[in-house]
Image 1 (cartoon, one colour):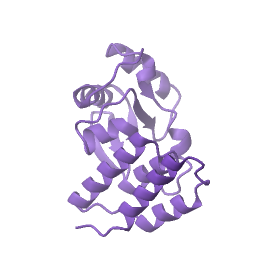
Image 2: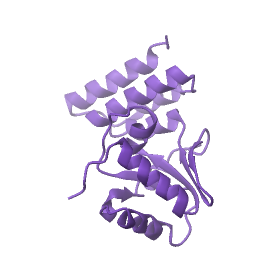
Image 3: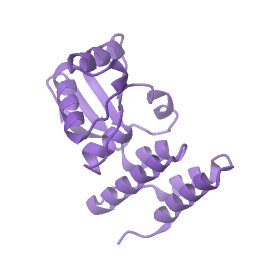
Image 4: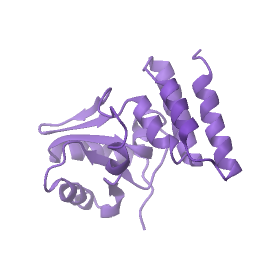
Length: 178
């Protein structure tokens, strides 16, 4: 069973990643929300993607989890499949942690929201709300028009709860900051 990770556990793992891994890595998902936007957020996995994946990167990531006493499933690099489908995903990345040979980055708020908008579970909506609030507090750019266009182009929601979550996000995007 995969343990639930709180902000402190995620921070320890990211510190170890910055110290032991090589290259640039992008943190996504609920773990990013926990360390960046909502300290109360917990997650079962850490979505950490090698930006310029080299042979051995995924294995090094799993070895890192194992050395930290966590199941290897705790670290997840499968998000790269979805990330690389987002045009311009590298734009607006920022450093969260830097080690001697590795950096842990975060995506722009727009890219984060684009990744969450496709599935839009209850947790995804809460994550979007937290990141939008943070972006507004810190004056970070959010391409609301691009996000609304993505929501409009999404497959029809046959689930009324999904439709309501999408409508909630759209409303937040259309509400001026302030």
